[in-house]
Amino acid sequence: MADDEGPPWRELTSDEYGPRNFPDSKGGAAWVASSECLRALLQRQHDGEFRLRLILREAADFRNFPGRDPNWKGDYDWGPDLALCCAEIWIERRNGRRKRVDTMSTRPRPW
Image (cartoon, rainbow, N blue to C red; front, side, top):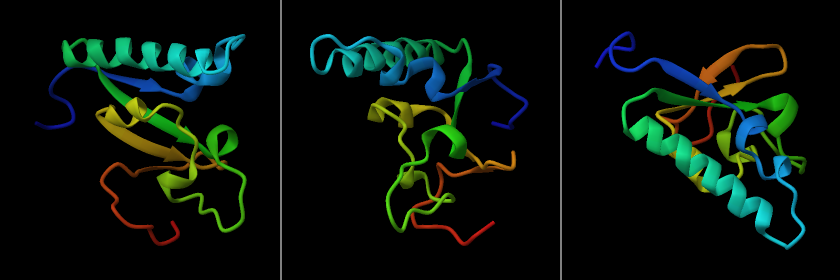
């Protein structure tokens, strides 16, 4: 299927579903609420309403640890693993450049 065929694209960032968006008075409640939000969005994708494009943002989702690589999706905090079921996954660097990363199985070269 070509990119211009099928349901429209809907971009998704952790601002919409991330655990930090839900109050957590009982340990783990935010994670559960985040998972439910993702599950509902993925069901709508499955129903053909839209295709989800997860945007991992260096400015908001990049983990803080030594040796991290801003070009590698594994070094980002995407929340519940359900987020990786989106139709596409992209990284958005601080400078605004984007690259599709859901097809990468190894760390990429710098871009």
